Length: 297
Ligand code: HEC
Ligand code: HEC
Ligand code: HEC
Ligand code: HEC
Ligand code: HEC
Image (cartoon, rainbow, N blue to C red):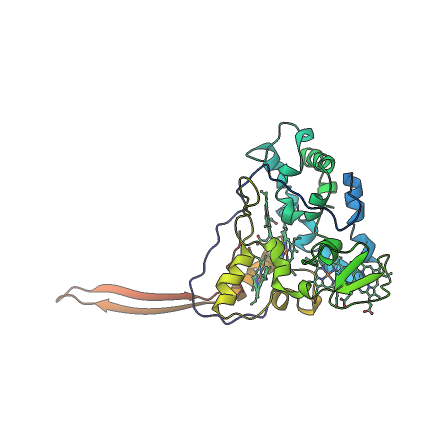
């Protein structure tokens, strides 16, 4: 992992754990010019990354090992929404009562849900309620979420267009046009979901990831000049480490990201004749080489 030899600074530990909740909220995004999806099956089909697997096999395989490919699940297949739909401000008495307002978390964990209708929210709540992991595991941040829905900001994504690093007139897949999106390689692209702080558009506000805020105000403001892609996507790798289910691999990445230097000076304090007090001066410096605070949350 390439690192930014940043100035010594105290490692700001983010408050762990996603939380703060909400309910309500007027979510008013429509899909990128396409007809609104009316069923969960329709949503799964439209966003199925298998459409791209045939020709982009290696990227598909990398992506399928990433947290983006299981964005409604925590570690070990834990479906975190099930807790939130049962208890707290997002809870419903019966899954049939759920609407999009019960899913502010979808803003970043499943943005395509917010382009669908309340009927889909209801079906999703039922699936979560009965802990149907086979379905929850297929709801994710797939190719089209990044290469279409989230790929441009100054206008809506055009229907039937993919976006990438370069334009292609005659893309071989069923979507024929690929347009260039300069935005996709900018940190703000990732920042759409990796968070600035509380999401005040919800009532009450929801807060989860805040890492992009830390990147802007703690790293770039301090002279850092690398982008998210420089550190996390070298060679266009779509695995987006760290993979927290690989505990050993993650521990190694964090040891490298947080080099620790310890200096110790042992001495004996001799206040008066015959009295000896062993003392030690310990200096610990932990350097954070990531482009933001870690851990996030
Ligand atoms: C602003 C976007 C955003 C919103 C809104 C959001 N999250 Fe997150 N969440 C993320 C991102 C990005 C990550 C992973 C990266 C990180 O933590 O830095 C994450 C991580 C998590 C994790 C840890 C996942 C794991 O693999 O263990 C859980 C659990 C979680 N979120 C639950 C929620 C819940 C529940 C809500 C709604 C109450 C919510 N999030 C709302 C962006 C968001
Ligand atoms: C989390 C967002 C995200 C997801 C999910 C994602 N991509 Fe990408 N992809 C990117 C970014 C960012 C780039 C680099 C764009 C750039 O360099 O301007 C990229 C680059 C690419 C490239 C160009 C590679 C090259 O060598 O130039 C291809 C092809 C691609 N993605 C296909 C896919 C496919 C297929 C999937 C689904 C299996 C997928 N992507 C999922 C964000 C994503
Ligand atoms: C039938 C094969 C085929 C399918 C299916 C396919 N692609 Fe491609 N795609 C290609 C080929 C071949 C290229 C490289 C063309 C080139 O570089 O001249 C490409 C290029 C791309 C690029 C541009 C890469 C860059 O450099 O920016 C993106 C983005 C992309 N594909 C995304 C997707 C996504 C997303 C899907 C699924 C919806 C998909 N493709 C399905 C064959 C396919
Ligand atoms: C559509 C929203 C979205 C976009 C865009 C997005 N991410 Fe994520 N990302 C997430 C969510 C949500 C998770 C956590 C999924 C989970 O485990 O529940 C995540 C997980 C990750 C992880 C794994 C570590 C972790 O805490 O789970 C990394 C690294 C990461 N993203 C980097 C990036 C980078 C770099 C980009 C830009 C190229 C990007 N992401 C774009 C939403 C997004
Ligand atoms: C200077 C390099 C660098 C830059 C720039 C950078 N990161 Fe990281 N990031 C790291 C390192 C190092 C880690 C520790 C884990 C690892 O090595 O993968 C990390 C960890 C993460 C994690 C896991 C956070 C957790 O809770 O432990 C996420 C998510 C993430 N980065 C996303 C991003 C996004 C999004 C951006 C851009 C806004 C970004 N990073 C910019 C180097 C960087």
